[in-house]
Image 1 (cartoon, rainbow, N blue to C red):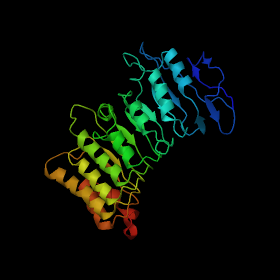
Image 2: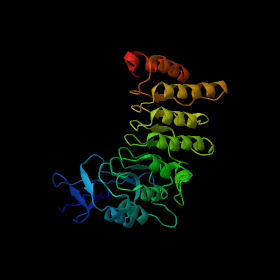
Image 3: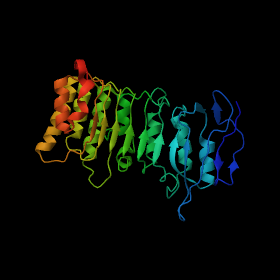
Amino acid sequence: RKMNHGIIVGSNETSTTVDDDESLSYWNRHQEMVTILKCDDDNESSSIGINLGGMMVRLVDVVPFFRIVNEEKLSLRTVNFGGSDVGMDNLLEGIQLLSNDNNTQTSSIVGLYLSGCGIGCRKGTRHLIRILGLLLNLETLDLRYNNLEGNDMIHLFSEESSVSSHPATMMLSNLKILHLEGNVMKCTGAMAIGKLLASSSKQRNNTNLKELYLGANQIGSEGAVSIAEGLRDNSHLEKLYLEGNCIGDVGAIALRDVLLDRRSRGCTVVLEHLYVDNNGIGKEAGTSLGRALNSESMIEGSLFDAGDG
């Protein structure tokens, strides 16, 4: 179905609309979809963003959009294609249009949101790796609900990956927030994340991961042990979400022991928020974990009623 890009480039007073084509299709109705506005700040380059997250848009081809961004010499800050089914091969082709000798256009992108794009089931991980290799200043990466499995996590975040020119180390130098909820990484993926956290702690000159969201990934108790080990020498992570992973008492105790070990060695426990709802944690294990985190009030009340934490 033909429809207008709905892309508006310019200030609030003047704008130019792109010609109709079939790059976007809408599931319900024809309407103007996207507004992109320049924000001029004291002679600095204009910064813009595209947000299609949750708009029930199916993206057939994003290359025309990125071609316009390139021709207009715009500096994107955020790209949100959540739930759009955009193909990673097509997104890579679009992002590559912004690459040049100075990488000025790709370096401006600090947020990439790709939740619910079927990356795992469509075998898009290798293309995603190449995309991340071009976005070295990325601060927020959202890969929720993409059916990513353990091997996908290894390819994305492990230095041992067989993928050539692996971008993980460079990308993580600036990455602060990583969303991976609702995938199927299981224990294998949790081990890769644990190694990621451990290697991150060695990069003392870099700004490392601050928030990590791993809810509903079926990591189990063994996976929680791997995550805990990754935290043993990590001095950067402030928020960790592990809800709905069936980590049980074993996983809770592993996290507790690592936190206590850090305190015994005089290390600052940077972790401020640890979310372990719906994990089958008993009251005793949960309470001891809360004490180790020095936030016992976090787990008082209904969280551990009937021994189901």
